[in-house]
Image 1 (cartoon, helix red, strand yellow):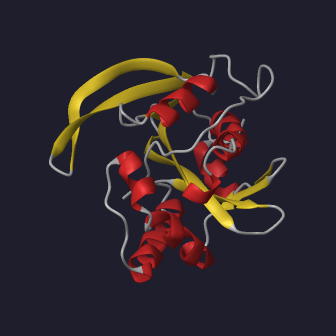
Image 2 (cartoon, one colour):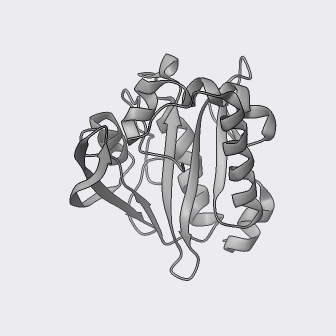
Length: 207
């Protein structure tokens, strides 16, 4: 098992049946703008869509800087048969002392309902425990984001509670739900077949 420092140094890339999951790069800004500018994607985690690719480029630059400062690790997933970036995922809000981090993810709406997020997250979750040395991975989707809640449950995450009216978005206070997965918990991929089903959405991502 690697330490957190060693995990950041490796810049690990994963290959799945349909995807290449690799560290985010500056060249990903154009494909990522397609995700960030879609209001049906960003409303899944209570954010307004991007209106400028320059802002998305700055966002990508910030994510790379986070990685260099060991404040977060960000991957994109691209289709193996087309090399198009269709989504991304990350560890952020990292607590090195407690070996805990928050998992975030998002997916281009064109590719919803194909199980791609599940496929991408399986190796990323395993790397969180075995590559970063995490003991606990957290996720906190909006309560009304049903697809994301169901995705986490399929991946073995346990419901811990609801923070009532935690997020203010477009004039409404929305509940936020908290999940966790511990190193000792059973999980797909490590303890049996991978999850199946239709994932679409987005737990959330750094903004």
